[in-house]
Image 1 (cartoon, rainbow, N blue to C red):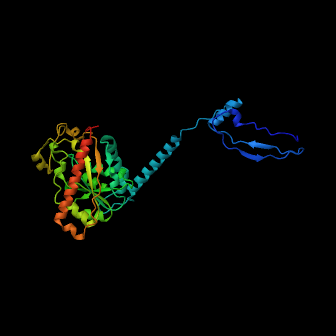
Image 2: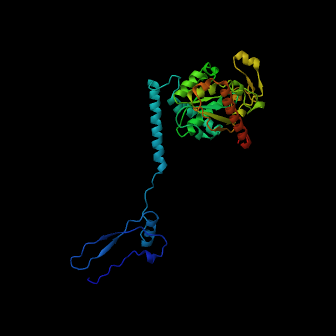
Image 3: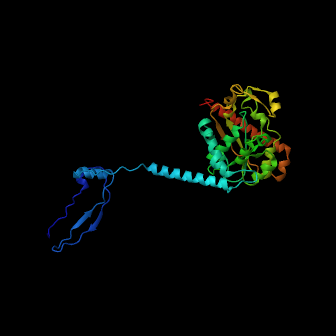
Amino acid sequence: MADAKVIPFDDDRSRGSGGARPSRRRSTGSRRSGGDAAVVREVQPLPTGAAAQDEGAESGEPEQERPPQPPRGAEEGAGGLERRVAGGLAFLRRRLTGEYEVDDFGYDAELTDQVLMSLLRPVYEKYFRVEVKGIENIPKTGGALLVANHSGTLPLDGLMMQVAVHDHHPAGRHLRLLAADLVFVLPVVNELARKLGHTLACAEDAERLLGQGELVGVMPEGFKGIGKPFSERYKLQRFGRGGFVSTALRQGVPIIPCSIVGAEEIYPMLGNAKTLARLLGFPYFPLTPTFPWLGPLGAVPLPTKWTIQFGEPIPTDGYPPEAAEDPMLMFNLTDQVREQIQHTLYKLLVQRRSVFF
């Protein structure tokens, strides 16, 4: 026993394998009672994975079968479903008990996030397949005025712009749109618009929202843009007297031009029944290839491919307070915003390969 040698029984060099073994931990074994030599044992970590299969193949031991494990996504999916159901029940309870908040304009943030945006999102993602560019130009905090072109016979472009800001902005910000008077006299539409955060297109409401640090969206073309004939598509109409510029100057917030391509073709307006529009109290009554000839089916928009691009901000905080009353300055800034939107529209149209794909 005094001349006993310790022979390593797992020598990596004798195997000739290129892979490196895990580092071994060494521990000193106890001395034998009758001997004077200390025997050092080598302790290896238990092999796992592919290494375990190699060890079993070399040792000739049969591989033990493990019981099938459920897929990882199954437990996560079940847990996610339970959380969604619990969240939905909690939402209904708050709705029934009135435990939710609505601001002075009627905006319901919880209903917008959980219901209204969920209804608009499939149209945004699957039907119009909106592509968003320049979302980084929208500030993370503080007020800003988003100015966009208006088109499409029905104002779906404003709704899609709301979804674009809400879903793509890193801070998940909400866009508060300034809407025309007609929106707030129509039944059902009035309530939904208020819940979505829309408010009357007047300087007082816009300044109040901007002063609260909100994102405010305005489409200065109004009915002139949304009701123009198809032959004048993507040609910006007059922007009014520049009231939106005066509002931005008073609050010192940046103006962000926004260009929308794709909305012009959803309802190609070939004619306008002006007599019928006057009888109904509408600014126009569109005649399209499908409406009113196909009845309610003609009101389904064409599935065009959209692009929404937010341009570089135009700062207004460097002007003195009295600048909001300077008509020449307002005219120049209004023209600058309009030209930037029009130039971006032409650029996007050149890049577009198809209206629908």
